Length: 113
Length: 112
Image 1 (spheres, helix red, strand yellow):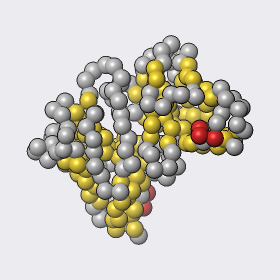
Image 2 (image 1 turned 90 degrees about the vertical axis):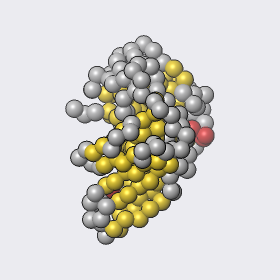
Image 3 (image 1 turned 30 degrees about the vertical axis):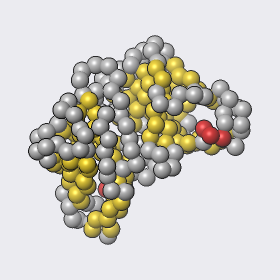
Image 4 (image 1 turned 180 degrees about the vertical axis):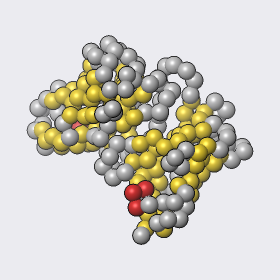
């Protein structure tokens, strides 16, 4: 799996958009970008994933650059409950078989009142 | 659905004692995983299972054993606990290996 680089920490004002960047310059054509988050002391929670098109769900939006070497997770209106560690992961998605998921150290997002 | 549940939530062991951590999921997922999380190290995969009756080693399997006798349960055993196994243990499951994983709430284990 490709290696990812994320800033160790970020702050965001409550109610504003939180933009979390991720660099994955060695990503392969068959690797997807996944985002998870981990709220303090809880298990990681899946947020969103994408291959090359921008994706949006009820939690967030994922913007992937055209060359796929970087992406940005957007939380449109951050709340205090969004304070968490956010993990950007790239992985192969191809049918059956075990697919390794490597969690790095992520970005610690602090939402400030 | 309860999702992924873990038992117990907390445990303190003395060095050399044994214990079993239980993970249960009610989503009919084929794949199940055990991770450990230590400060500053992210999550590391201990063992995983691709279906009932199967298990496989992950990144850090030494000192642990697992069993998947029923599809919905995945057990993690420590036969002789060591202080280095002090950690937070997370169980996860997924429909298939390529799908997103659902995580349990974690078990905080301290070995003294």
